[in-house]
Every structure is written in C-alpha cells, then in structure tokens.
Image (cartoon, rainbow, N blue to C red; front, side, top):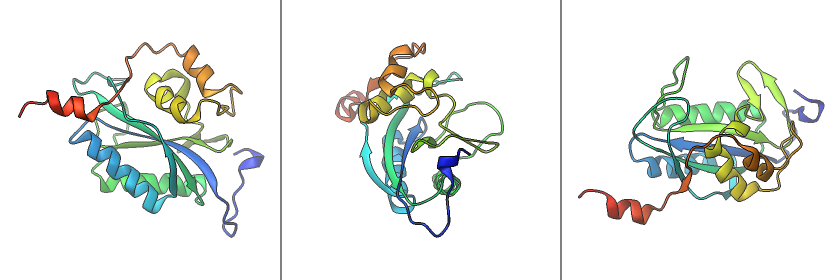
Length: 184
C-alpha cells in the first residue's frame, strides 16, 4: 500500500471508489440494478453512474453478451472492507467464484480505483490491473470519469481509452430496443 493509502479505523473519511458491475446470466439488467442498490445500502453512497453497456465476453467464449456499468461510490470503508462488502453482495446474488479463468456469471463487481491509492496485495490490486486492456471497462468509465488520472500511468481515462488495443464492440444498451426485439 502506498503512503497516501493508510487507513485508521477511528477516522470516518469519505473515499471515492470506482466500481464496475457486470452480468451475462439471468436477467442481466435486473442484476446490475440490484447490485447498485445493495452497494448503495451497504458500501457507500452511489453518487454517479454510467449508462449500461453491452459487450462480448472477455477472456472466454460465450454466446450471451455482458451488460456492464461503472459506479462512483463515496465510501467510509477502507479498501479491504470494501472488497469484503462486494464479495458478500456477489455471494448473496448467486455468484460462485472459480479459482482460475473467466466464466459466465450472474454478477461481477470489481474495484477499479480507490481514490489515487495504489495497492498490490495477494487478494487486492488497486487500480485494477486490467483497466487499460478492457474496452468494456474504459468506455463506461470514460463516460463518468473522462479526466480522472490513473494513479500508476499518470494519464486520463480518456487517454487510456484512445490507446486501448481491445477491438471489442462496446455499445450502449437500450432496454426499450432490447425488449422490443425479444421473443414473446
């Protein structure tokens, strides 16, 4: 943990944290809405959020596209407690974590940034190490944090998105259009 990321139990400081939620199983949109609600109730106030985006699976092949949304949460939890809160929410929502590899899931919640903290521990890496490689993360993140500066690379989210080599198609998800095209 860097020096600017030391946390005392007795200090109630509000920290901005960027999270991404994702789902490609079940009622995907409902899962994102439920995750946002539970995060707001248990982890901190959700003060900004991106639109919902649809993209293909990343790191594995699946026919069902993912829906993703980035949330900005003001939290009084330290990063370790925030992670514990997120893991509890995932578990309650039916997420079963696998030891290796990527797979389909009802819900996935990742910490992207915790202020300008840099944390490199076995079970917690902030900023999320794959941000620069994932268009499905950068696109919604750029919607609400265009000028946020990545604490390790010292470039904006918009610059990271412009330099991203991922050629995945990430599109805004329009619930009305999707529902119109759904079979009855």
